[in-house]
Length: 195
Image 1 (cartoon, one colour):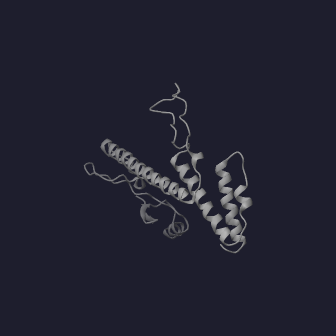
Image 2 (cartoon, one colour; image 1 turned 90 degrees about the horizontal axis):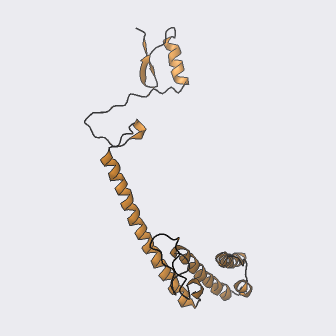
Image 3 (cartoon, helix red, strand yellow; image 1 turned 180 degrees about the vertical axis):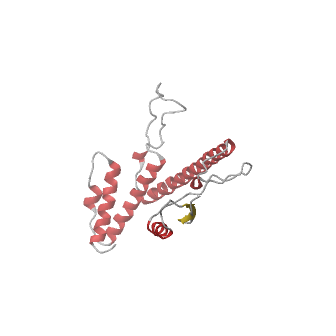
C-alpha cells in the first residue's frame, strides 16, 4: 500500500506521486484538520460534550436539566420580586421624607369589574394599588427623589431651578418629562463645573 504522511498531527495515507518534501510543505501552508473518530464506551456514562461530537442525552438527564432550569428561574424570580418590593418601599419612604407627592402613582378609586375576555385569576385594581408595575414604580420614585436632591444641590450652589421644576418637556409622557428634568438639572451642575 501507499506511504503514510503526518498532516496536522495525524497520520493519513499519502497520495501517489507526491513526495514527502511536498507533503511537508503542504502541511505547513494549509490548515488541514482531520478529526479523530469519536470514542464512546457502550456502558460508560459521559457528560454532554457537543464539542467532541457527543449530542446524546438520556431522558433522565434531559428531565433533570429541565427541572433544574425551572427551579432556578422560580428562585431567581422570587428573589428579584422581593428585591424590587424593598426598593419600592425604600424610595417611597425617601419621597415621603422629601415631601414629594406620589399620589398620582396610585389608584384613587376601585377600577371597573372583571372583563369576560381576561383569562386567569385577574382582578381589577383597588383604590391605593399602584397604577404601574413594581419595576416602573421604582424607576419613577427614584427619579423623583434624585431630582429633588439635585434641586436642593443646585439651590445651595446658587443655580436657578424654578424654570426646570415648572417645565413640561413632554405632555404625552410624564415619565420622560421627569427624566428630562433630572437631565437638565444634571447638565446645569456640569456647566457650572460642580460635577
